[in-house]
Length: 290
Image 1 (cartoon, rainbow, N blue to C red):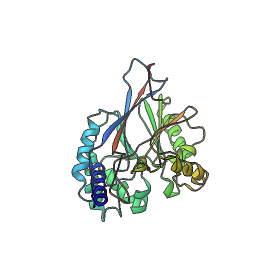
Image 2: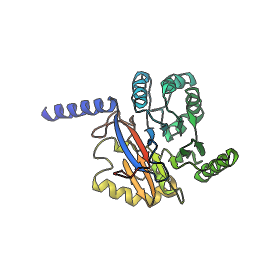
Image 3: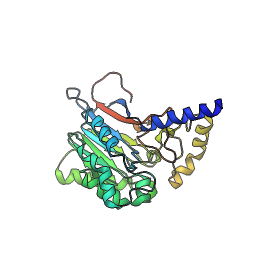
Image 4: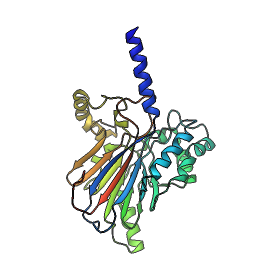
């Protein structure tokens, strides 16, 4: 009976953690091309909402919490719906309607995730557009201080980083602008970090849920499996488990993987709370996480 009671308590704790409002994880990244005299460029990152019917009120709270960070950019890194997805276009629009209240000085942009493609990419794309969110799969979004390059989801078999680079170059040429000082790549799956040749700047991704249940993807055995599977992941577009949560570096390139907001398979989180990520890009010298 004691074991049953302990298990029930653990499940209750994990369910409550999965449904709690997100914590804020902050990174301060050095960006030498930014002026130290200017305020840092702040980007807010949200991923893996995995919305289901009845989640509108929770999403409204997440939107308010994100707006309170006063971001210059809001980056939405895919997997907006969970389970089998919304049953209709109207249901999808209702679920994502709170996103229309997101406020960022330079804009709100998104890429789709594997679940969005599985459930029907056009439905997710239409609902996001109605909420005023710009989709940038294999495309670029340019602001005075940042260029955001979106990569389409691996699941779609259309991920094309060079096309995003071409779109950026074309935009800069047509508008007679120089490249902004900050380059941000956005994708859903962190495996794409190893697919962008000669990547410069910072990539932001989700997909992993940070393992969702500690110690999934964090113990030595799981890390070994991730390293072993990594070559296959690169070849076939799987998520290898090599990148789980946090800040990663490869040369001068960086990637932030967020544990995201929602859940998949089981509505549980344990030791991996939902999170919103705030990234400050700064030109000032001093302690940074990048």
